[in-house]
Image (cartoon, rainbow, N blue to C red; front, side, top):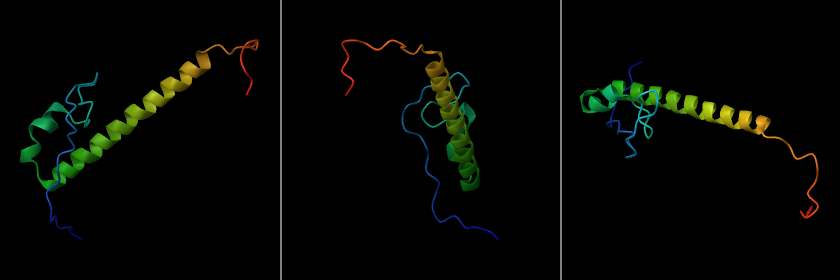
Length: 88
């Protein structure tokens, strides 16, 4: 069943416009090509770019969360309580 597009797909740009280590925008997670050709894309192509950008975003968030967990594991725990610290 064909789905009709009644509205244009708007740009996901949030005006951060800096590249991460993989060459994707840190704000919208689009590649350089995706950003350059956005106005030429059909709504279906734009929707696909947004889907891909969303996957990139969640991959980055998962990596950040894993790094935080590793840092917590590596942080030495204080085995001796502080005599001057309030326990409440």
